[in-house]
Image (cartoon, rainbow, N blue to C red; front, side, top):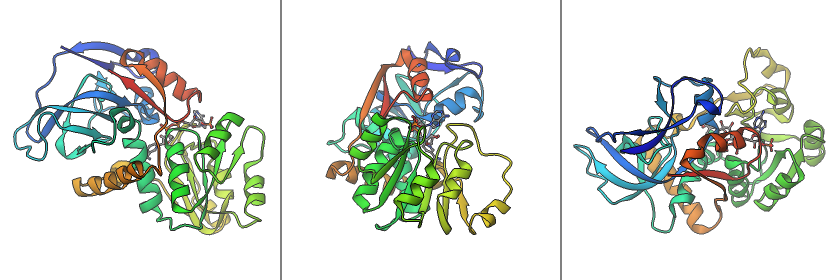
Amino acid sequence: MAKRIQFARTGGSEVLELVEVTPTSPGPGEVRVKNRAVGLNFIDIYFRTGLYPAPSLPSGLGTEGAGVVDAVGEGVTRLKVGDRVAYAQGPLGAYAELHTLPADKVVVLPEAIDFETAAGCMLKGLTVQYLMRQTHELKGGETILWHAAAGGVGSIACQWARALGVKLIGTVSSPEKAALAEKNGAWATIDYTKEDVVERVRELTNGEMCDVVYDSVGKDTWETSLDCLKPRSLMVSFGNASGPVEGVNIGILNQKGSLFVTRPSLNGYADTPERLQWMANELFAMLESGKVKIDVANRYPLSDAGKAQDALQGRQTTGSTVLLP
Ligand SMILES: NC(=O)c1ccc[n+]([C@@H]2O[C@H](COP(=O)([O-])OP(=O)(O)OC[C@H]3O[C@@H](n4cnc5c(N)ncnc54)[C@H](OP(=O)(O)O)[C@@H]3O)[C@@H](O)[C@H]2O)c1
């Protein structure tokens, strides 16, 4: 038997339950991973609350983890039992001792990267890779605005921006989070609980505003974010921490300066094994060079997944959170 977290109905963290299940054998093209660490992400909360529907209920939860291949299905030649691996996509169910998923969604983990680091960055780091290197290819010299700069994705973004020579202005909700974001390489921070974000961006950029805004907060920040952009520049809306952006009149993009907007996802970018491997190689190179360090600031036993989600949703965490099976 193996432990996993599942939910039979959507709702608050109380719907998460720890159950014992009979491990499934991997089918053709699949592998089973014995997780050594599991990553916690805001998207897990969207599935738990029903904002994103799970394919069926009861459902497992989580898509990010790292561990050792424990069984391989028919036709899998690239991976073998005992390989150290990491993943950030595939079916829900990473919050578990054992997780079965398509081998195509799994990459081999370099020896130099430990399991907690990998579980703390596969989804978040690959997200920063595609946002900064593909959605808009930052070349250095740009000024960008990044919301939630002290969070899991944000902490990686600050360091990656510094490595690229990009001026990242990060929004945060406390002086402690501001200090952390600046330590990670944010060029400037704005405490949105005390300061007017648009006015501070205007001051910091001498009125020029930003080349790109990366907004994962959603509903609460949509218009502010558009107001922080240069004419004809890009708004990247990639999350809904405060709720989804809905009912948008497309004419607002004209009013605010002939803006562009995109709503991307990791699955839309890491959509082939080759692209996933290329993106992972870039992330691993950033880790191995020391330009990006993963701050696994919060660790919980698997059984405390609900507590961990409450802390993430309650803005109490910084950096990455992992669950330990
Ligand atoms: N599209 C994609 O491919 C993709 C992939 C990964 C993640 N994401 C998105 O990126 C965001 C960050 O994910 P993460 O897992 O790294 O989380 P996180 O940034 O560690 O945590 C979320 C942070 O958002 C800020 N926030 C602002 N308004 C909030 C609200 N109403 N409720 C809760 N938090 C609020 C808080 O920081 P402050 O206290 O400083 O405001 C909070 O700490 C999420 O929105 C997630 O969905 C998208």
